[in-house]
Length: 199
Image 1 (tube, rainbow, N blue to C red):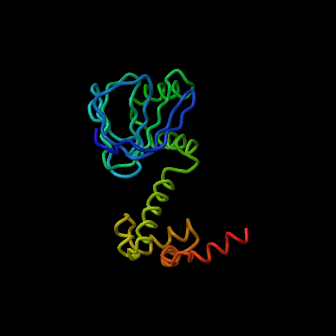
Image 2: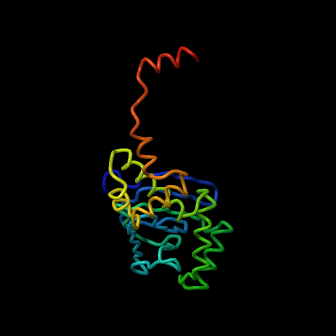
Image 3: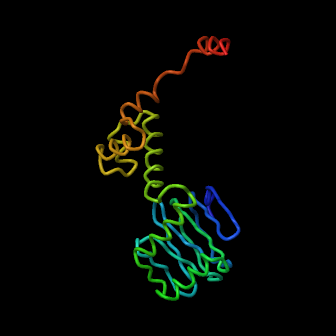
């Protein structure tokens, strides 16, 4: 594994777990739970020792690893969500039935249902989560002085108009307004002291 890999947030309860963050690479391993792999940014590969490379589900992204199935994950330089579901839980039994019924070929509606699980846990859809992360990176670039056009291209927006629409839709201001706000000089120290003395 590489340094800095698998850094993110983990949520756990009795029947399931969710990891969202920066991916990495794992050797062949197995665990007693379903693992649902949802790439958020970049390319993620999952290979089963039994079934070979796992292809995406109905959305072209979801991969389901079976309980106790030896597998390896390569999510280097990517962001990924991993949902772990205990096979004895109600959701785990539903997943088992679905896997048997479809032989692992998930229809779009069924893959959407898995995405809804992600939405319920994180409180935001995968698409909006990906867009929010993209916007946060754009904010960082703009705050550092990168112009709007270069920021749009660097962060994967189709063009400047796409970045502007996303910015207004999620922040209520344009990237230009944000850049002016973020580049404003800090409050002078004497003014800071005056504010403190008034509190």
